[in-house]
Length: 348
Image (cartoon, one colour):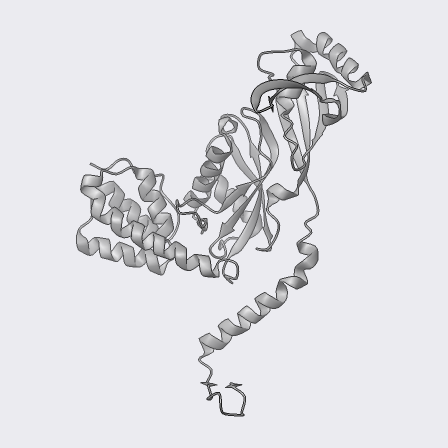
């Protein structure tokens, strides 16, 4: 008996045929050949291998099919590596989404997998990454602390081809397949050479709803923190190659702090080498050792992308590639002459 198949995918017929096979049992040789041929023609071999791995099938019953599919998927990945950067069909989407409970309980790798499965279930032609182990070509923005909700998060995803749905209609299409706590707010198309969204995150905005029992003490401690020039706390670190703790000044890490009734609003910078966890910062300021409830990241600011200002450095390459593709597809006559011939090579 096969394990339960993954959630149904609204996508190419080849993947739907594979899911029917996964639900029915090991395929006959002829059916296996038809499915493999369909997966190859629709460029879904790597997607199929990912589905097969997620299904956790019995190797004794599915070993032959698994071996064939893995070999075909590996070859597909190698072929894609040579044309990935200049693939004219590839598209890059930037997703803005909301992450609430229970979805915010996922660590970044788990969240990326969850988002990838959601996009594939919605039938988007999500590209696989170039790693040996197949996974969607998807990158998250600056990570959230576990159990913290985010009202405006970011992710980039690569598509093999256009999604087939207008950008403004994509959120509704995706959200129909999204799990509880995950909701796509907006889909934007960016050039394939754009900087990854994680590199563009510059500032995080936070809102902390202070529990009523903590409010008086929290106001006093936050006030003392804001009036201070330095606020030191112990942080784990390696000292002389050994694990230890050192005192660090966290005063510069919280910016624009202010109270609005029982809510504390503040900002934190996002920069290379800075990994300030607002939960730990609040715990240190408040003198709390337990969990800090009520923290929400309201939005993440993105900076200007320096690559977009250099679009001319990429456009000529794309222009020539499109010209080559048109020439090859048109079957234009090409006359190649010997090296001794003084006449140039003529195209047309």
